[in-house]
Length: 377
Image 1: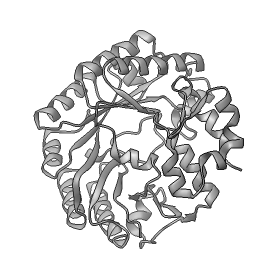
Image 2: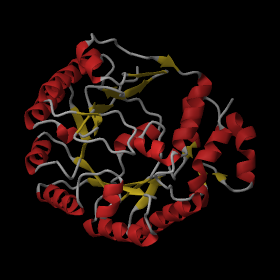
Image 3: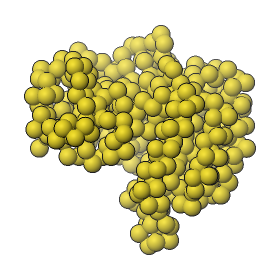
Image 4: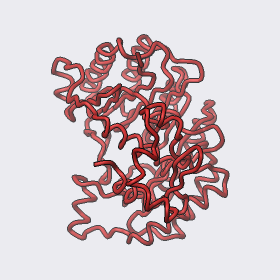
């Protein structure tokens, strides 16, 4: 029976809410709530010990802002977690950090507990753009956090980049890209700003209080980011992700390869065998209520699984292995999707060779429209 080797842990606390963010989080300074939340996280993982591997390949602690937990809560979380799971040889253990609030003390704590990958929410190196994004850190904070992490021995660091920020120009984008290159991280996650429904940015864009950069310019920025990072030795391996050699995000690759994973904490999602389930977005309920194993569970049909396999796999620039698809489903991609993908193969938007199906690199910026059109009914 398949077992889960990849764990996500959600820390839903922030000092302030970024206006573009649609991840579940709350703003609180109440350490008692955070301590209770950590205790519940450790209770929750016990509920799934029957399907979690004794050898974990990847752990990802995200948020929210994981470093918003005080040092004692972080130590309790990491001690309790490592008492319940064993990290496999060659594991990847990532934690997200906010460069404006993470301390050297907490970075040392992460290192002591075996965390070997940091993801730094840098976003941009210009004060004006950071202010637009509602970020509370400065460009100097990014350098401080990065250099401190290097001093402590972290040799696998991701820096986040957001582009197409209102008011951004090609020159300001070039400035930020040069600063990223100057730091020379192992990985860069580069996201086009998205106006998610329910966020402050979405409401402001509807009211025209915030002017979105036009689509054609966004595409130009995306293409420029790809070209620039490629010239600096970063491989573009997924729509929004670039890495140095052998520094891809294993945790995220597992998701894009349709692998099983478990999510712990409020709003966290899980996928195992034919099922998906997720926890509700409510810290108080999470802390107070008795655990319901597999909450909000749904079963994927065969068609659902094939569609998700295609949707996730085409996010990777390497595309989908025909052999892996055949082994997983017992049919070929050509048999299942020929009617859907035929026109895209003819116009060279999709490429099907002897071993894989993948997006034409020149058409990767229209991934969404292609994938939405080829999914099975």
